[in-house]
View (cartoon, rainbow, N blue to C red):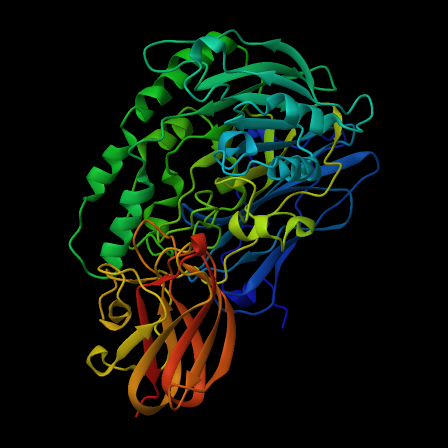
Length: 601
């Protein structure tokens, strides 16, 4: 059923209640103000969780285009944003999901000549994990070849690269292979030989724009060209932007400590580190690097030039915008409010975190970038960014890529390495205002997570007490991975198979329920340690009455995450529940708990 704003009890900001646009956004229309514009919400329901779009009934005129910005908020808490351009009478924002709170919808419209809508740019930031070699583990060159195909598919205008490490020229050649003149890339090696570590040429910048100037090497006590470098890039309309690739220190990162804190909060365990101590992780070298970048290096390059600034890279630091009071109950946040200091420095310096701007709800759009290879742990780690600064930059959309292209999926390389790197890529579309026709290709968008809650609710039914269960396995690691650990009621212990080289998959772990029981579900809790090796990705859940003859209940494919996976077993009668592991991370098998549930009496 389609509903409009009033029937949803949502506060209107329209026709007298519409918050006036700031002076900088006044309509450019020599014939006078074009407003007000009626608009409404088009929703698939009238309850929290319903999907809606803002429909703006514009008033287009020949030769003009309308830039429309919509914001869905509850007070200062923003749940959705969109900026889009329209030459038609009815324009729609991207879909968003209604939160539990009542919301206000703000609509700002700027009218301008269609030749002055600006220039669309696609920006992309990516850490390539040692030049696309998966830290040297992939020696055939096939991963790098596929990586270059993927880059050509994304087709960024500006590409910020971390860990070029010997592949920079190969990537440039691959990007330009078959490209016509005028659409070819320039590649700039930003990390200078004076700053090579044992790894080599870290930062690169690739662009289809004209490279007007490469900024000289910057170095002080905190950063060198290993951490920051950039260039001035010319736009087709004669204006320019400043573009920088960046990287800050990786040791003592929040990845492990915040995951551990989330698990401890979720299961009522004593904390190893307080919230304040977690924030101190960010201050190990990275805050000093951030100050050097923002307060010294950038001013030395840019001076008082107010042209837009574009930055991308891997900060090894978490986003303070995701860990506010608004999102403390998002999945994996476990009640924590964490004002991460490094990323807050960028916000305070006027930079926009483009992914979070375009995907305001951190619960539904966590934007995990670490790690598409070694697994997404309990707390969502977003450490890679595209930042923009400048009044003339409009963010249109942003997404995270963490899967190979469909044509690259399904082979052995994909199974072991589901993406081309251990970091996800960040892709953002922006418009730089000024002369130009505005957006000229489809805008990127992120898919929401289906279940943004703190932790999946327990299945329906009653768990079988651990004391009534026992377990066996076809392989286990002596001393540390006994199958009994999977039914001991303790999520901090886990069953682990022996090394994959010793016993190849499939592996089997069988739980004896003590007698034949009617089941309602079984919960499979992945291991909760930071090392996710053995996390089950593919397999089959089976049951048996006698422990000898098993029948299949469900074939499963589970994500590289630590959240529990539940299998509906309504009406199943069995004494034994068996998990056949066809593939686990690293070729091993591991699981913290297998918890059978029986119907409520």
